[in-house]
Amino acid sequence: ELVAQLGISKDAFHIFLGFVIFLIFLFFSKNKSPSWKLIIPSLIFGIILEILDFRDAINYGFKPDLVDSLKDIVKTISCPTLVIATLYLRQKYFDEATNI
Image (cartoon, rainbow, N blue to C red):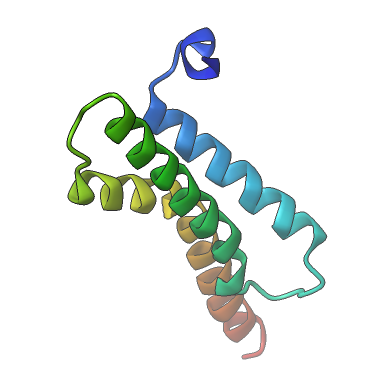
């Protein structure tokens, strides 16, 4: 398993991949202003990973934990959300300060 070979936790792997997906979409985005829509690919990716985790839990005889899965999805989109919020606030307040 890739996570074991990298020596990181599964949560850290989800966060890393969610952020990489966000950066790819941010790089190819045609919008010059930050858009919350850029978080959607990371959100979809997080949901797909949790579906796979549910499948694995069922296959190995464990009870899937919905609350834990929701936490994982939030973790997956946390970095993209912080970046978009920072860019949005920076643009809003920086532009207002320079227009005075």
